[in-house]
Image 1 (tube, rainbow over the protein chains, first blue to last red):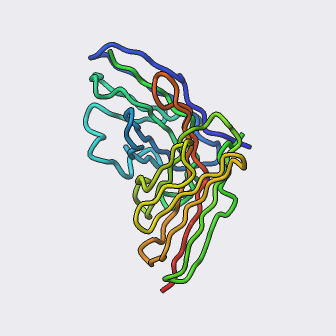
Image 2: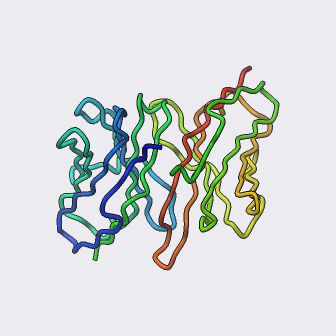
Length: 114
Length: 115
């Protein structure tokens, strides 16, 4: 059964550094998403992406965040200048159709900002 | 390997009746379980959770039951209301020394509550 994969599983970085989190969505899916879960809190929606454009984003997704689909398989989340409060689990998801469709989630990348 | 499974893609119930959403998991290392609700054009929002040390957690109309031996959990909504119509995701997490990791979501069940 196809799965969403994410790399790395754990990323440690210094405050102020740029990080790129990578995701490979399920191959026939057209919509892609990033979510975040700060330790001890619930999963929060960050952004959705379709047809090489952001379609929805939350208040969390400010100018320090960006997403890209650099090739036919990867979907990336870039954090330009990391802050301590960016430490969280980041989940990628994908679906065939939009937000009303079933989303399949990856296992997550744990980001630790020191 | 889909470690969290919601075998019913859709469920339809009458307003005022009980909605029962089911979820099965395969990894016995999961020790925290959550339900999320998602409306169209929005991201999932947290609904209710349960730790593996409990077998029941209740919050208003929502109750989650956990059967660890069967690796099964369910969400009961009583009474169901039309506003409950949404997609419901089951999720499971494993907690380690560094906090939550290995979060897995089910594929979702679309609940329709008819007036």
